[in-house]
Image (cartoon, rainbow, N blue to C red; front, side, top):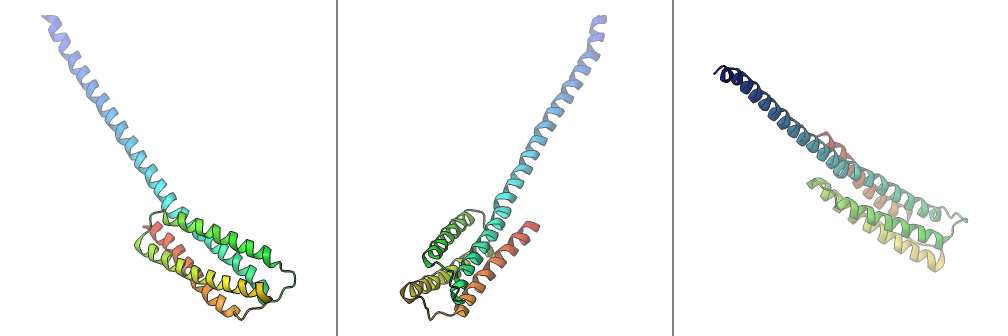
Length: 174
């Protein structure tokens, strides 16, 4: 009978140890879940805020590069090669189209979607004017299109990009 009394404290100790082990395992599972949630949050920040901010930067850069190419013709720089510049403009257009498609694939807040749509409209108008300008230049190396016409469309597109960039900051703060 003595052995029954000596087993009872051992059973209590084993039961307490089992509860502690279960508590440790549950805590480990909960911490892994929290780490996974944090990882998902960082991935979301990267994919939905950092990448779009980078896209806006590159879109702005391509827009400026296109403007610099066209400005040579307004200032009658004799060192210009129209065919080479047309290819460069087309390459910038292709790169911008790719960036816009990548941008559209990210999560867009409502205002961001509207601004991106507006930017695409402004860019289309800028590209149409650019095409007309290049077509005129190919005919007789002159054009009636003024630099001011390009400046207005450029400023409108640049303004949309600036607002898109600000949205990245605003949404990132939330």
